[in-house]
Image: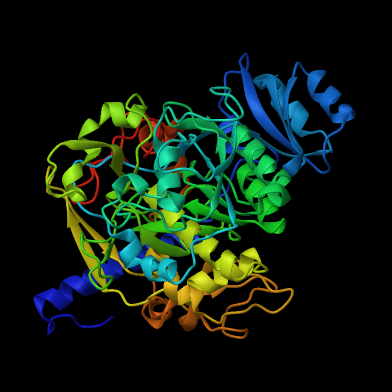
Amino acid sequence: MANTSQLTPAKRTKVRMKKTFVLFLSAFLTSGLCAGSGKLAKDLEALDPAANVDVIVQFKQAPTEVQHQRAMSRGGVHKKALDLIKGALYSIPANKLKELSEDPDVVYISPDRTVNSTSSTTTTMGLDYFRESMNDLTAQQSGWTGKGVGVAVIDSGITNLGDFSNVVHAESFIGLTSSTSNVDYYGHGTHVAGILSGSGKRSQTGFYTFGGMAPGASLIDLQVLDGTGSGSVSNVIAAIQRAIALQSTYNIGIINLSIGQPVVESYTQDPLCQAVEQAWQAGIVVVVAAGNGGRNNSAGTNGYGTITSPGNDPHVITVGAMRTMDTSTRSDDLIASYSSKGPTLFDQIVKPDIVAPGNQIISTAALPSATLEATYPGNYVPYSTYIQTWSITSPYYFQLSGTSMATPVVSGAAALLLQQNPGMTPDQVKARLMTTASKTFPVSSTAVDPVTGIVYTSYYDLFTIGAGYLDAWAALNGTTTIPAGETAMSPAATYNSSSGQVSLVFGNNVVWGSNVVWGTNVVWGSSVVSGMNVVWGTNPVWASNVVWGSSTLQGFNVVWGSNVVWGTSVPASESASLAVNGDH
């Protein structure tokens, strides 16, 4: 053990903080968390036996009438085909689930869980400068606007007014609107779409102040969230299925998922993860929000292990949120302390993959009656932000924060790449974005909650910032290529109790690692992987009772209940979250 008595107070504090982190991580990696027993998800084990429950059943093969009849013979009702994941949605008595799970054709049964948006309201107005920070304006001035690339936005819908003339298809999976023009009753999807591909024309002052990352891209609006920002996993899977079916019609190259749900099982069992993998294999880049749990210390982990599903899948690009600090330069940008951190529950996948601006982002408003706008009118942006002589509030632009907002920034950058290189595979896009991301960060940064005075410290390790800070212009000028047959799957982290070291584990045919195309330092940067050779603590702080214990995530009511923001408030300098059925 190193002697810290001769260190300065500041250096002793840094050593203590590092020891705290490694204790968290080593305990997490050695805990051996497991999901529900057998073929039944953990959150199906404590149901009222007399109640009916909507469940997603995955089979060995796409179910036929034979499999449907077996479920119906147990009192089930077939509600929806989910052939994309060889599954189906049924309503069935809870007391028949174990019996159904014993069917040899059944692979896994999970509830039709709720997904939520991953954005937050904010009470402090600031300019976001996200396009400037990403060097996106340079890219657009060079002709890269995402033209010809289709992006499926699976969210609360897009109110197709003003800044949107590029919505080429709209379809609702929740029955709120017609299939030709969705109305965003929540206000989230419109904001996400504006960041991704809004024209910004209503903010024109000789320059489109609030345009999107890829204003030339086409938008495919697939509505799955209702007016409260909530939806079902089965509808999200159905929307992904639809995006794949429309792929050739609209040249869909990207799916944007600024939504998430708690991780309850391995990604290999999670039906939502299985769906995004199918889209990836079909040649569609899937970009997913990491979640807003970076401040969640209810399990004593300082926010580590809070990545949400399907961001826990190693194929997809999982995005964390940065703060532009109200400047147009990148050098002073910092991580948002609420941005969820890896590694992922159960599988210990290294996430997020990349970070991008997501704090206090100004984008397109939906409707005055949309839930977010009506509830938080103070988030409307003053005209003075782009018309200096006007002092009234603009009805056209709204400010939100969260990894939901960072996700379309990355989707937009992917659209620029696919315009430049139409033949790029999802793995090639992921590798290009990650290898060209900026890897210059401070060791740590802090955020202070002005209400509680709580200080949140963020460390710039690979579980917090992934491969680094997105740079759209660098990606367009990159030369990264992937040999045939290789993938860009995110690695897993593992702890060796004998040597006291944490290392990265790469699957078969993965393009990065010490013995393949790029070493870990090239992808993640030397500053975030060098700590893996230290001796890690062994005191367990992340046992199975932390995840399922009565005082933490029981029934998800603590984290995902109404008016709860991971048990803490978020400072006005970052975002003041409201969290109705989740962080948004």
